[in-house]
Length: 109
Image (cartoon, rainbow, N blue to C red; front, side, top):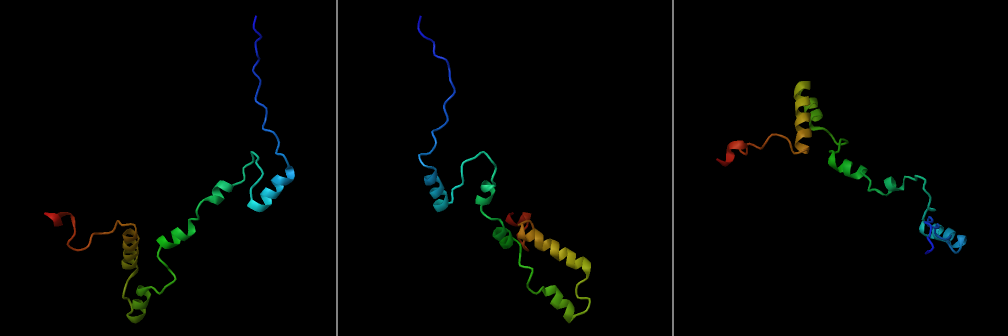
C-alpha cells in the first residue's frame, strides 16, 4: 500500500538573515516592524482634508460688506434680510442657488 502523507501546516517564513540589517532598513527608510498591531498608518497616509475644506468655504477673515453698509446707514439691513442673504450665499457655493435672471426653466422655449 502506498504511504499516505499527512497534511502539515506551512512553516513560517524563515527569519531574516540579519536582525541588524532589518534595523538599518527601518532607520534608513522609516519602515515599521511587521506586526499584526494596529498602527494607524493607513489613516496617516491619506491626503489631508484641511486645505481642501479651507478652499471650499469662503474666507471669513475679510471685511463683511454688510457691516460696512450698516455703519454708513443705520438700519441698512435687518436681521431677517441678513439671514436670507447668508443662506443664499451658502446655497450658491453649493451650486443650488436661484438661477440668474432670464435663465429659468422656461428660457429655452
